[in-house]
Structure formats: C-alpha cells, structure tokens
Length: 189
Image: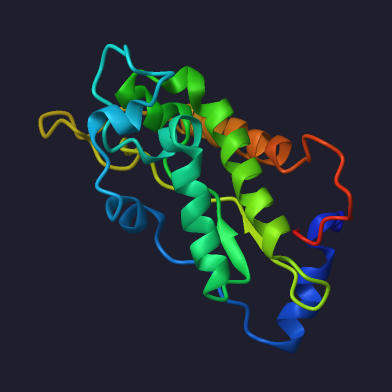
C-alpha cells in the first residue's frame, strides 16, 4: 500500500505526539444560537428560491459566510487546534431535500475556504491550526427499507452514496487551496 503524502497536514502527527489536540464543537448548535430567519438563511443570492431553506446549515457557507466564520473564529479563540468544515450535510444526496444538489460542490469548496481563512488568522508557528473536512450521514439510508412491505427496498444505492461522498471530498480538497497568494506561508494545515 502506498503511503499517503502529507502536504499541509505534515505537522499534525508531530503535534499529536506532543500533546492532545482539541477539535471544535458542534456547528449546528452554534448556528442555532444565531436564531436566523428564513430570509437570513436565504441571503440575497437565494432570496427568490422556490423552497424553504431554513435549517440548511451548509447553505450558510454561501449565503452567510460571516456566520460560519464567526463560529470558526470563536472555537479557535477558545483554543481549538482543529476546526471542521461546515459540510456535514453538503452531499448531493442530502442537498436534494432542498433542491440544492447542484450546489453541493460549491458548498464544500466555500466551506473549506472559510475554515482555512479562520485557521490562517489564528495559526502561529508554535500553534498551527488545522482544518478537518466534515462528512456526515445523509437523510437517506442504504441499510433499512423505508417500506415495511418491501424489506429489500432502499431509497439510495451504495453507488449514489459513493459518488456523492467522492464529489464532496474532491470539493473539500479543492477548497483548501488558497484563492490568492498570501504574504506569509500558511500555518493552517
């Protein structure tokens, strides 16, 4: 088996050998603290969208990146070493519930950029900060039938899930790249 080649995460194993690294907390409960309305979830870009989007937390990376950035920075200011991207439900399968499957790639890329920018802001040479891509379950299950009369029925296939998670990971990796040259090397991994 070929060993993984680390790029920005090269420092993480050394950090973990020296101390316990702290992962941020829940994104969803922090978002709830903002008490956002439907209009605030939509923002200007999605103000005329045909379906309710309140509760689509991953959409906030596109419509309200300031909220997501504020949450990341709060965790980093409190001492978190690693922050998760706002992508727990940012797969095409999960976003289909909102008719936003076509935005899943953009959500992942933008979420990674927001998290990286927050890490860049808080990283120091003696305390680098790391971005962790968050992959969550989908609202569909491949293991339990949604139909009690047909135990073999499934509302999603393994292949649909594989493709959705593959696209998500590729988009997260794309979003980790800097969008503009930085004045100093990024300590964020």
